[in-house]
Length: 361
Ligand code: SF4
Figure 1 (tube, rainbow, N blue to C red):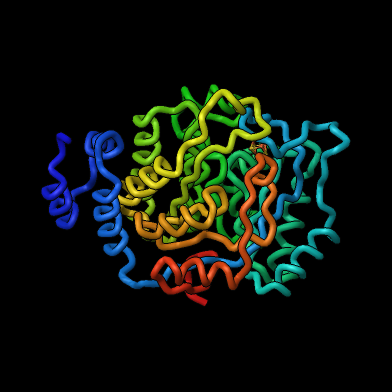
Figure 2: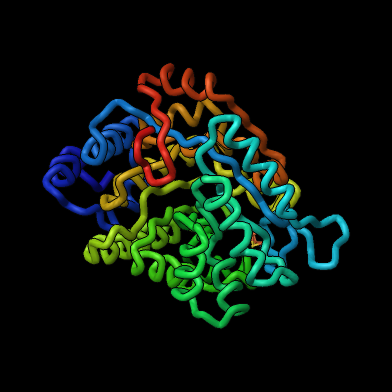
């Protein structure tokens, strides 16, 4: 390959930032063992311990009714569809109580963008989970926060402040997919452009909130698009770190699109496990200002989830006590606490439960 890997390894050790051209060369030409070395080096620069962390939380979808109609989404129901649901406060309370009984510390809270819900519903559910039930709320992807801002007239930052006041702890990076407008227009034309997604994250960071970065790949994008996605996240994290106010990305997670039960079934090839490993390793090397990388065992399964730990990941994400979205696309992997611990140990690391902001429990 055009790149001299030894020189690149040395340069990275001395603080060189992977360029887009270098990332493209790694995507096209690097052998997986070479990527393992570079990604493991990068992981060690951020986290020298043998610990691999995970959080116990529950992925609660409070509604599946949604007017955004992403072409890749097998989960949502159109407004007016009688099969759709919205959780009542009592149903939500029960889910929180079960979560606590099972050792969970937080709720990953996401819709649907349900046009029939009032602003007060969002404040109420966040307050119930956090103030009444004492759980961390990692909630609402940017498209949901934008929809709320339209409802309440408070603007993006005002909406985030009000949600934080009600009990919101951090914001998940759902809905990033690929942050390249040409791709977004094809796969989710109503979801907003990349700037719309980035603006919500920027406003959250400005007020000192923590968020996560994500990428869903393998949906008709090119390698250059994946790199552009990583570039805008790295630039945004640079700005967040400069503010030094506690806001910014805690972690990055990437997973391949699951085309089952969507209009894309049969039209795109599901990304291979090797492509996933290559992508997560290059992400680790490129995102030199992100402290943590999550292994996506929920979509890739335990074996590849373990392998990702040798390609730069230091976190297994969530021991999801409930997962609906990936399930709806026909992909189903599930582990209990014992299996999670075993999976991490068998990969040669030490399991450690964490909270939603990466504090050790
Ligand atoms: S991915 Fe989210 S925003 Fe898009 S249709 Fe599904 S529920 Fe709605």
